[in-house]
Image (cartoon, rainbow, N blue to C red; front, side, top):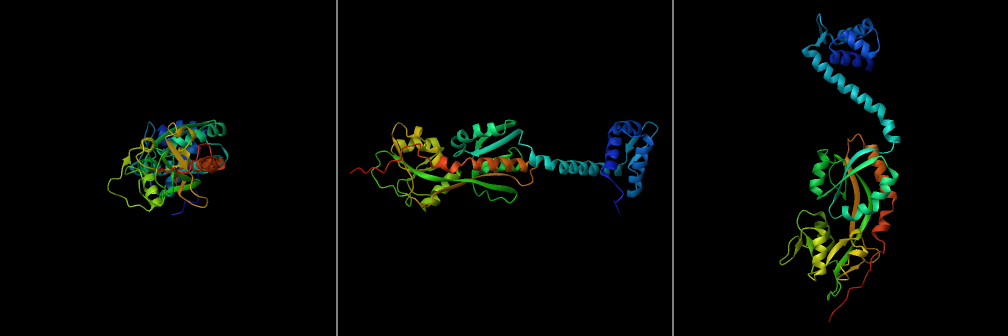
Length: 312
């Protein structure tokens, strides 16, 4: 069966008749004569070999077969319009609502660096921010409750597009009077977030430490973890963006950069659904965030970096 004689306009006529339940009103809506519209509908029915509409004295009603034809016609027209809108999506700036998620160990410390630049660059963009753990954010992303997520890569889902933004190094956070050498390759005195936080797994991997150890203490969130360090309970690995000048807890915490050439840290990226029709806009936003040179912000010396203090 050949469809070479059909056009998108023919499908639009079918949908118009179905919506108005009348050939005359459908023709007026489409801006054509009733005989012309009726002839095109009849042509479609001839190609298909089955009646799409049942003609009555008062109008036209889709047949059972016609209902299925109309479902496909609506879908085809929607895809055609999306195709025609695609070039516009690649040239117009992102606008409208955008639900953006971020993992809890990143969002509060990254957003202050990017929100003003994003609003200046994309003034028509309406950001709705959310924070959570990686697993929950990805579930919301797959279910279209979020449009994009900022997290530590990889996300490990082939249905998602991943774009790296920057590498965020870890710094050692320890009590200012910590009396032992701080060795990121050891878990002696290491404090961690509780299960479910990706930063916990990253810290364990960086320290080559077992997932569980007798007496190890855990925190429910990054700020609680920071307070535990300030109390003298131990040391931890902290994302660089979270280790700013105002986070030393009145001098109770010291931060120590890793030696040059080390790669303890995480790659921060932006992910979205691979089939999202706004993918072009997500790429624009990701490219803009990458151009903000966030690695230099993460590694900036806006906080005191103190050598570990040894107490005899």
